[in-house]
Amino acid sequence: MNFPFYIAKRYIRSKSSQNAVNIINFITFLVIVIGSAALFIVLSGFAGLKTFSLSFSDTFDPDLKAVPAYGKFFSLSNEQERALGTIPGVLAFSKELEEQVLLTHKEKLATAFVKGIDSTYTQATQVDSTLYYGTWTIDRQQGVVGIGIINQLGVTVNQFSDPLEIIAFKPGKGGISQSRPENLYNALPFLISGAYSIEENLDKKYVFADLRMAQALFEKDSTQISGINFRLDPQTDVAAIRQELTDVLGTGILLKNRQQLNSTLHRMLNTENLATYLIFTLVLIIALFNVVGAIIMMILDKQQNSKTLFSLGTTLPQLRNIYFVQGVIVTTAGGFIGVLLGSLLIWSQLFFGWLKITPSLAYPVEYNLMNVLVVLATIMVLGIIASKIASSRITKKLVSP
Image (cartoon, rainbow, N blue to C red):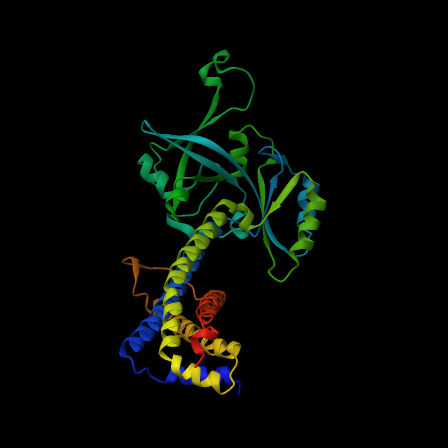
């Protein structure tokens, strides 16, 4: 057995004759356990929040979406549409046309986006699973809106006598003052068949309508769209499918996955996660100063033993390694115990949901092996640095008889 490791284990198991040293060692170990558990719990909480936040957009977003590289619209010919249906790995695809409009009902106004969709939209996305009440019926006269829009405008489902009105400004050039007011926009009465509910911002954003109705409202022809949604076979090569889609659609089209469609949200969540990790790591760095102090106290307490070992032929580097190994063992053991305690808390939250956001919604957490490795690696690296600093305090003058 390695000599420094053997002596370090003996020092860890044995109690000091000075009660203050024992108390300091216990507090140091407890701080490491609590710090590592706290870091693991916070990282698991942010992982759960990230998954929970992205689940809102995943119901709207397809596996892959084709959008124009420039402008807001592009044309899809019948030949291209037929070619898309023959690409292996594409389980379903759907065309859409999206544009901002003004909604009005009984002198109340709201802005939203009309998303004109075809009959295969619910096959390419899971948006119909968000239906809150009513029916998912979309045709030339009716469609589905967010519950936020309904609350803003005070409109109800199947309100035949006084339906919602959609106002879309006409495309064109020239000054507004040069045209008559009635020539500036298209207005369309719109019956609501159902309401979806996901998240506050999304609930106020969309009006799902029929694609042909939207094309007529925005004065677009039957080939003009703003995007194509694709649902892919999970077993296929996404890179190969991307290439085949590019060959069909041309280079003027961008293909974006879910992360690219929500790049701002992903960056925000990743930045928050990194900032939290750095803050708690700083707390751990401050806490691990206790390790430095505890090892120095142990060096002073065992000074007579160190002199004896030095007299028996133990070299100065070996003496330093004894206290270095002792510090590494203490911090590593504390890190493992802290992660274990944190894991028990996270598992209890996953199984029992004892911490609630609302009476019916448990706080989202996620047990992730990567978080375990990050916490243990952080504790070990900081422990090695702290132990190295403390063990370097052993000098020849300190151990000379």
